[in-house]
Image 1 (cartoon, rainbow, N blue to C red):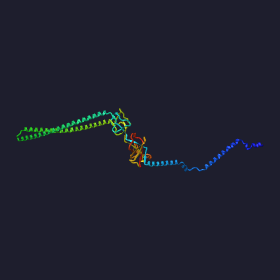
Image 2 (tube, rainbow, N blue to C red; image 1 turned 60 degrees about the vertical axis):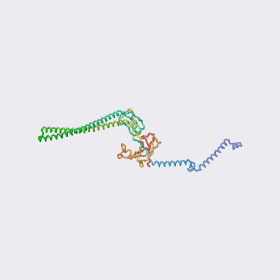
Image 3 (cartoon, rainbow, N blue to C red; image 1 turned 180 degrees about the vertical axis):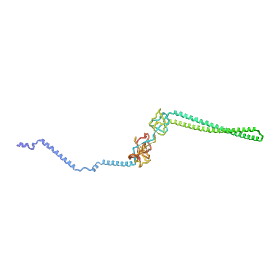
Image 4 (tube, helix red, strand yellow; image 1 turned 120 degrees about the vertical axis):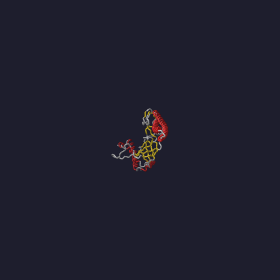
Length: 390
């Protein structure tokens, strides 16, 4: 029994069991410490927003400054942009036209090329001038013939004047002879009545008187015919002068036609859409190329609600879509007195059918003060104008 009692004592326990218990004690102590610490932290209240802002004061200050900058910038932008009216319905415009010869013929020279800039008076195309030179020579010959006819008729008129003078002299001579014959016949009749003269003498003087009367009538008729001849020649002279004027007009037309064989630029601008070529036959009025003058402007189709304060002379800032980094300055030249649809081919008839009110657009002409050099700007290019109206 003593042995059994000794075997059940504390000294009889196994070493492994004692070591296991000894290891569990520190772990339990640690769990108790940890749970105590977590209870302490849970007992504390969370930090306020003010404490957090104090802790991150740099970020808060930066955010506040950024917010003020954005707010002030937005306010300034709004205050500035409220004074402007803008639209993206705007484009570059010009009075482009086609270049065509006034006379027909084969094209012999085209000294320009596509998109080339030319000055006023520069040669654009040349038509074969040989036929028109021949026509000019013919017209000059007709003028020479007309001048010769006038000279001939004038000489005839001068000769006719001499004939008139001669007829007048013959008439005067006939009048003198008639007067003498009348006196002779009176003396012969008087002598016969007194018995101092013969009847034969009286008959002779009577015959002479009748002969002189006929001679006088003939001289007067010749004078009248000569004077009528002057009128006829004067009419021929007027006709010759009219023919000369006609020939001169044909000569002037021939000169113009010869000049029209050279197609020249009426103003400075650019050649576009060139279709004429050497060797082609061009008829009068046939387009050889299109021409864009240097005088270009902006047409901005503003809404009618944007025109309340817009007046000619208002400054305009423009940007071209093709060159967004280039800022242009211009001014309003004029505002069209009516909407764009009012002048269209088929204007709107609001008096018929159902009516739906639509805000209309009104074209506004804007002139650019100075176009940028060495930049290709032409009709149809999109523009965004900002017009300062306040």
